[in-house]
Image 1: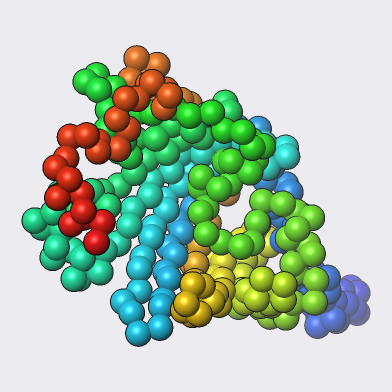
Image 2: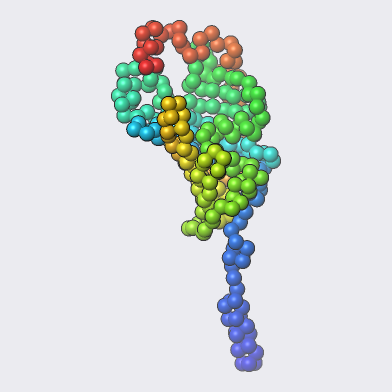
Length: 268
């Protein structure tokens, strides 16, 4: 009996010594497949995106987008979004006495659902109306993704595009998941992607170098965070009695309610 016990113990020890974790045997999980598994009806993900434009010899501008994106089998199908500019200190000081400039820092809400975009806080509206509706001519997935994620050059909701992006990228394990890094050569965008242990994106950081008018160079830095993949989510349009169509607005930007001098000063 002792010999059998000793043999069993030796077998267990040998098995433990030679066992290799599944992740080490197969390498990091495929983020494209991880995202594809999340493309289910009435499920979604939360996004926080902060974009910065850094001009040479100028104060950087900041723009934040908070979104809930409803997914479907083919990608995003709807989104609830809040967007807000971050004014630099000099502009914020001016905004204290300039109502039009102060409005730039007020949050704007947008909902994309059912082929329409609904905007809150963007237009001058008649009494009793809070949302403006406009038709969206593009595809549902493109409209929802653009409403939720304004600036990033990488579409993580397209498994095929994500697989192409990661081809040839460097990858290494980090705490809680994996880190990928690469460059989009055509638009000159460098990117970094963090995933959890299952391969789902947690953070995407892109840097794009742009030369615009008068050869003014700038860097567009976009930091996107993803959370709560698979959360139950159904985006619904605003109440119908609070909605007005854009075509029915007589003065959507409130231009006729402002003095010409005030408009000129605000736009300078």
